[in-house]
Image (cartoon, rainbow, N blue to C red; front, side):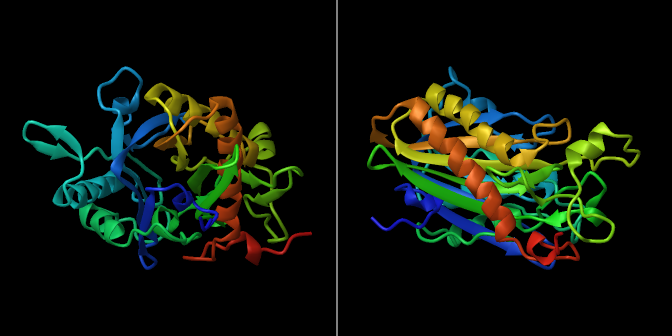
Length: 322
């Protein structure tokens, strides 16, 4: 099997983007049309989500047909309506006496402080993302829900760094795939794995590198913190999981955020991770958790590496560092 290093390495998963570079926003759909067992963990304190209660263990529905990640703040949750339309037209969804109802959880980032705040992804944009969906290579960087993503915003978006969307995958136990797709819009910094080096954070006044958000926060910072930020994403695997196990895996996968975002899970972040289980392979949840944390961390770093300067916000690769 060809491996793309992406969430589409999991059989049955497709990814589609809708990108508006002019308004600097967009949405991304992760399709699993035949249905995947799903779980979720929301660790941030400013979440913007849809259908997350349904994914809690003990609730009726086990499987979803898609996950939507979107810009546009709470307005962007409307993108899921277009995804529902796309799935209904093709006969996918939860069977009821009145027909199939597609189950489409969603999460959003706040990107209204960049680009045109009056343009937000809606039903049409969600539908267009479905039409663009592929099970092949996934475009990363300032695309889809990552179009308006930024990080290092404790001093305001004027000192922030452009971020985006990243994806990563790996195989464990011979043939089990664990993969992630993450949109990185944190108030905090993105940290290099292993070294602790700041890869992206609030820019120094002379543009010679980055300041530490944690150190600024622990000091006598007077500036107001931007109100809403978040890291959102999806972990997928072809291992067999129950809904309770999927939610547990989502919780463990948040470790990948903790390894690469400093600080994370703040009162100003809505950090939320979904898990999709689309296979029938037996696997140890602990092993899946170790892999999930790793691919989440790798996808976060890739979101910074693949980002481009946009709307006056520079990418990390365009900042000289001392």
